[in-house]
Length: 294
Ligand code: ZN
Image 1 (cartoon, rainbow, N blue to C red):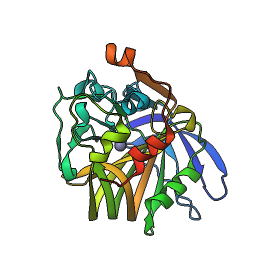
Image 2: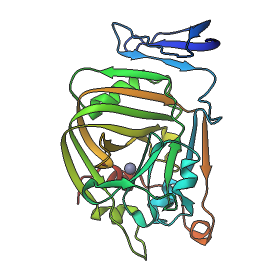
Image 3: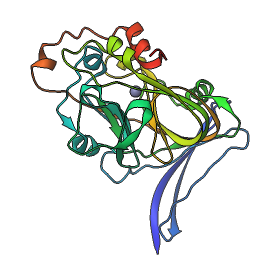
């Protein structure tokens, strides 16, 4: 079967920052499209369809509620896993009452609880904060040498065409180590997240293959979402997962999708309407996102 297609190939080199786009029109057999453009000097390639991902939601970052609301202790949302799933097949978040960490990967929604123990989340389970996309990566980076995840983030940063838009990022890798945490369920009256998170369960995983699911968010969106990089981990067997604090990879493949649209659903109800939300305190966000304290 022959099919006509348009495809944009953008070849990207983080070292030299040169880019060139080549527009191709052609036909392929069996309708399969497999494009891999890898620079010998660099490890980054960019391949993607200009026609979106077929869901009609291409390059849309969808989120329910805001980081500032979560930081203020609004832990009970009215969005279900089913509604989150209708907006994406890849992402992260948490559950009502801070009952663990949400990992959305390959269309499945997982709930990682104490010590990272993960299970499939029920569709009626509710969330106070979640971020998802229909993941359609438009660039890949091959990591062939062991490195810390902070170095990996630096490599990703150099490959990004701009730091002013969000990206969805998937890292499939062999992990030498993963330090992760899961939030502990809270009871009312809820305390601010920077306080509640002190009860987190922190754990370390050694020598696992798995996936990081995450986002890069521009600085100017810091009240809406976690600025910079924010990843959740899940093992290949989907048995263990959590919010990433640190990691080291032996080798990995990084997939990046640039976002063109941000869509935010705001919770209804008096909790959200009446909360005092002046903006996030960055030191508090660092405590929540990066601290390994128990
Ligand atoms: Zn997280």
